[in-house]
Image (cartoon, rainbow, N blue to C red):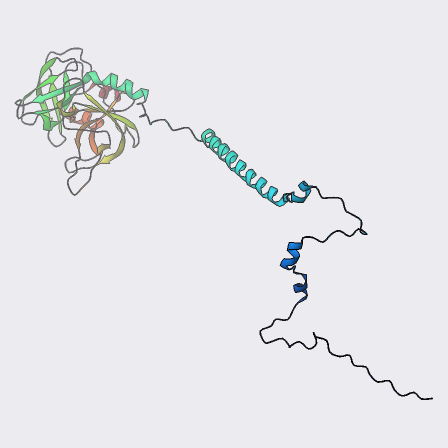
Length: 321
């Protein structure tokens, strides 16, 4: 038998259901809002333990407040920084030590090269035969150098030192003076022959033969530079050239050995002690031309030839001829 359908039973609305709907300013609740305790809950304190649940052991205070273990990365960073500092300090110390140890020793102060022993010996051999010469009046006369060429008092010098004079005063290395007469002179060759009458045993120079020197050879010039008192002045140089010509001379020796006023008539000597030339002039500059270390000497073989033409034949010239 069919039963009539049961009618749906509708429950009357509750008070919550009849509440006003939320306004436009209301915020929808989230699940997190249900977990925020209210002030009343904070005042009430924690809920009492359930007697049916097992109790847990209390947590030690130290364990509750212990900081987390330090990170290993920080230790690595700090250790690397310390290692870098140590390496920097150590490297600096090692570098300083290496710089001080491996630094080259300072070079000694330059010392002028000594003259070769041959030149020193040559100077000792020739100097006694080098004389100072003074011609004319003390105030307006000339002063220079002369060379003894024979033990009996024959002397040679530059003609321009005794030009127009018949006698001259010669001063020896030991300070003795002698009066010499002008026997002959050659203005073009710039040579003059003087004689100390009655002289015996004088030290004499030896004059070189033809082609006695070559460019680059060591020489010394011995002369009465600036007419200074005492022994003659010595300057050292080389033969710069041979066969030079100047405005007044031809076929002369060029040297860089210093020649000053008063050195005219002096000796240009090689290392064997032989006179290879008679110093005669030096070039000087002017505001427009720079000149340094250019001097000239008459070759010794020409001196020998000029003296022979004047009537003086030297003993060494006879032996060579």
